[in-house]
Image (cartoon, rainbow, N blue to C red; front, side, top):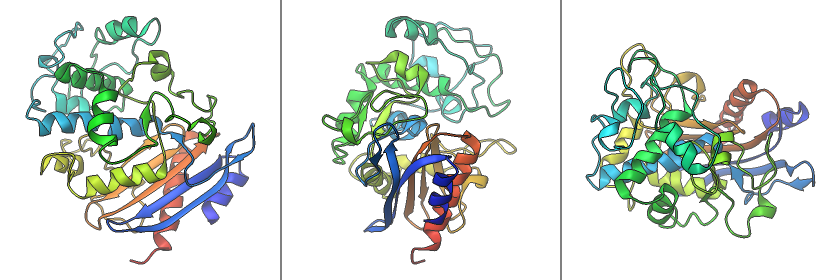
Length: 329
């Protein structure tokens, strides 16, 4: 692929695995470049990636959807009604929905040192310096709190919950929170700041071996395709009917960054060939997943980024656009 080869030649990425499909079949797939520059391991279709912030949708948002399906969660109640051990000061009530839309005003910085329990206590004491709904500000802190909230509702670790009720049911056998699946380390990419198998996100790495809600899932293109098809089917077999609609609905007030529960909707990252209703999410180490609920199609672009974050992010959009140009309408 032209765009992949150009980005590899520039050193922007070392390689890529791409997969596009509809509800019935894969429409385009390919593996390019290398997965580990130290060992010169080539990319393959079963290469395992640290999907970084794509964890927020595949992992933590799945936990929220389970709680909604089970009738245990109201998105418009204050989040600390559910996360009762939160000790921070709130100038105004903040709802679960506002956290999920990155409109809560929570501090971008959070406690990331000490033991996992010390980290958790520090994060639960985080401040909210900006009133909710005043501005959109993407933050890991909100999804860490949402992960804790899901754990409080179910009284079990979020990785166990989502692993059992989502990943295993979908037979996402190469997907695991905090580390690659058993035996998968030789297939795992080297990231810009971590050896294969080590979580790239500093907070999720510090919280290891426990799972943090903002990052830390390892997965493959094929597993993410299973997840994509499930979401495009309305959550069939995993979530209650109608629950996944929240992931394709813009809940942000007029004038603020359009966002669904978990998923981004701003149009500057939607490639030509997809409908305006398309949602997506990206990961810091070089991954983006797009879901088009109108055409019932998805594109997954997984790379190992080694240069500028912004250039690489829009580079993945170019790759997705090239894929869409080369599959039947």
